[in-house]
Image (cartoon, rainbow over all chains, first blue to last red; front, side, top):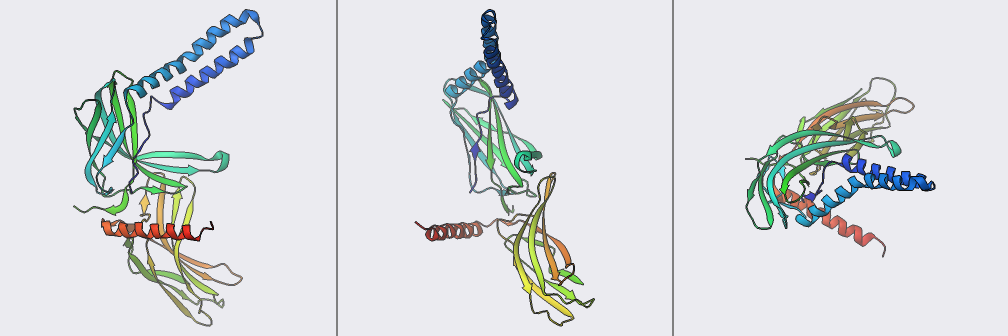
Length: 197
Length: 144
């Protein structure tokens, strides 16, 4: 019943990657435009090499990250309701890296859709943001963290329509040694029922 | 004149909301029908949406000075619950409508709140079973 999806590993913000791709595109266009001029060929190749550098670095970091850590999984016992109190267990295989620090947050996000067709766009707002205190269990070749979570009894519950959504997230930020830092986000479904304590 | 009367203003999901829509003659126009509609809608900064959950019709209205349409609507277990957030709201309401011929319909809306029911795994088991049955039925109905 509960959806727990790993949206990671994420390597930095999307803007950085977009800028790197834009720079590479500029380099390709530059070399294409300059190729007819023999004098410009060598400088154009240098420009392309410089423009390709950020993408190359990103790909190298991604390769290192994929090599060092495996796919993450989050396990939560029982269905999650409003007022739920329990522990989530985070697993992630480790190969050639070690975990330095782990930060976790419980977030509730509202998403609404404005317009339609080409003018369709989403607006987002965080309506609940709480720092969690994960406790890591030292293990060989694996990250295992126990994360205590408590969903506020006043809600809101998860909600999903084409026009509007309420999404609960457990977001993790991992500071690593031996590979780039990374993030992981899990969507959890909070049922419209309240656990009475 | 039309008015909506509710037995309570707060209801839990999967519980029933009872009440009545009352139309009283105030002119010469006689309605064709009286409707009691249970619906929820999304309003706020994004696109709007309206979903009718159930409705009750009163058709026996001819030459009467007062018509009462009682209703007993069950709020679905999956909700949604009433919600007032930063970007949008989920509003539950009962709409009473008198369909007047060649005139603007008389409409009265009364909002109510849907709050979460206490957690009971059996409720959700039943819902899962109902959903599975529905999927099976749909599968059987589909031509091979």
